[in-house]
Image (cartoon, rainbow, N blue to C red):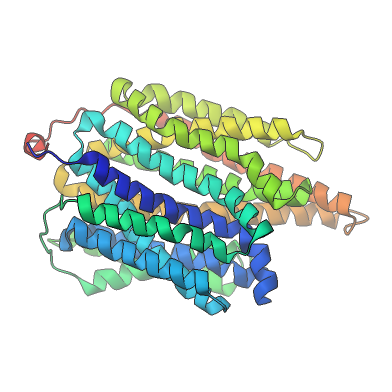
Length: 477
């Protein structure tokens, strides 16, 4: 039974994950500021997010293979070097193109780190302790993006946007040093054959879909744009070919046998549901607070802080409850809470009080924390150890795709709702009418989120606790 220094291993991975996720959302608040600084349009500025998502969409499917080609320490070092170099370049960037290049390097770092984090947990923790460990990952994945906008709001108000990156840099360096000291190689390097054609198909497939939806979500573009239609069609065709190819290969790049495990599928669908709910609401709420209710970016950030902070703090606790009682008693009540809060959110208006919106956001985030990690951990627990890298690769890749789709759909529903309202308005340029249009569009987005939640709730009734008894489970722990 191999003993790992799990605390030190987790500390190094979590510090780096936290910083990576933090800079992801911190930059969202800075976008309007960057548009002034670089004299660029909103659609161009959107590339800061799109390039990041696109890089993740292309890299994530390959992580299952990379985890078998490089040792844990090698991947960790490559991931952090990329993040550190990217962050340093971003901090020094004086042109928009340089900032985009820096974002791509940061995305490479994150794209390698997150699957590495999940895979390491599956290997170093026995199944009965995984829930709590995954809960800490939940803390990072939720809490870092939550404080991003608030901290960035302060930095932009008193310093410049460069400090978002200067602040992150020392933490990444500390994370790297801790990791180099304590992180052990936990996986076997088997070096399976690399199939270049699979790589090309996966890049075109996942890249095409993420790009198409991101482009559609730029607000002014919409679904009918030829670029959007062509990239989504290319993406879908490439994905079909990719899937067919993986099925006939002896050593597939992404092993699709993970889909033979029913609880993995249920967990995956619930994670994707959470991802779509979170991204559609987290994009619309700050926009509504700033444009509909005329609040400052900093105030909007502060209003969303309690809910997101609570979600992060509760994640490890939900993980422990999952270890004790299994997923059903968390996931079903969690989705009911989400459904109720989203239903209330679909009736918000300019007259809604700040306390009301903050309370609803807290409810939403508590509900999500009850669903996300338990569903994910339960699903991954059903896989045999040799499929861990593939299980995490599939889950992380599809999360990026669901994120891009959720964001695009939310922006499009918002825009069409606003257009419809203003089209029938006698004074479409009046600020109060614009706020009303924003209200109607936002309400429609929350109704979309409610529909997604109810579909998730139906799936949740099929979840069963996985009892782990893999033949080589004893030799692992």
